[in-house]
Length: 82
Image (cartoon, rainbow, N blue to C red):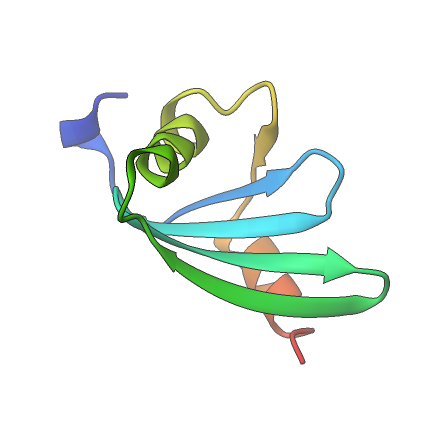
């Protein structure tokens, strides 16, 4: 899928299940981080190249580190955020 064909939001999670991601644009995402039995929400806007590269990897080169998830998977995780 090319950048021009990408629709947002996109959803990913780390393969270990410790973070869930909602990618809202090529330059922004939300992360739900799981620490123990607590869930924390972080919002990020990419302002520097390493952050833009992270988003690009999550979108286009995710197979090694991330898994595709559904919106409902993300919503289930966000319902547990403190």
